[in-house]
Amino acid sequence: MLAGAALSIYGWTRRSASGVALGVAGGAIAVKAASAGPIADLVGTETSVSRSVIVLRSPEDVYRFWNETETIPQWMENVRSVKRLDHRRMFWSRVHPEAGILEWTTEVVSDVANQSLCWRAISASGSDYDLSQRLVLSNLGSTRGTLVTLTLQYKMHTGLLHSGAPMIIGPDPQRYVRESLRKLKMLLEAGEIATIRGQSHGPRTLKGKLMETIIGEAAA
Image 1 (cartoon, rainbow, N blue to C red):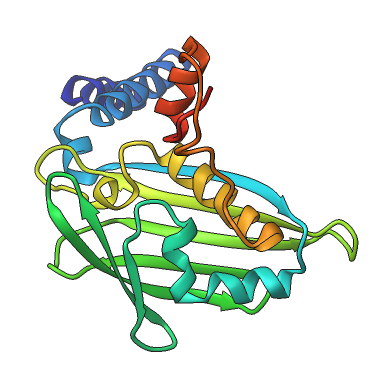
Image 2 (cartoon, rainbow, N blue to C red):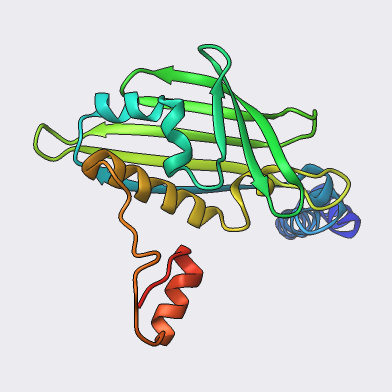
């Protein structure tokens, strides 16, 4: 990183076309080194995961259901219980396989009724979660339902600072978002979550074993 910075400074002080090229190259080297070294460990790596699903209900229905704390553990991945503290804050808990009971508070950042909702996580223990989520509801018309988009933004700390985001969302953020929306859709449209868990089956195929690993349900 220091070598890249030195090269960049040298290039820009040359006041020539070749110097500009060296300046740009040196800057690129420094940025690349910083993104993979101790500075990256300190600052963290920001990541965003987004997924959408069409729900055959109105935006008003989806928005209202999303705010019903007693139903959240039924469809949101990794959540054990949710308690509303006030109109902007909710207290969450989940059972972590290694850390035991994990607790955190979410605080609403912005809220536009029936359109969008954004909130961030605050650790009950004072540690840094660097985690926020955003819900966007797009009305597709009376017969087409609502496009529900959930975006998860979090920062991964691996060195001097540590983020608790992975403890909340689990090791697979893509699965966290996908499965939460899938279950939300089923509850809103059918009133229940379809499952084949516990049903009898024949010998497991390779596909069945893979599906059991991926979606967490026994599949033939």
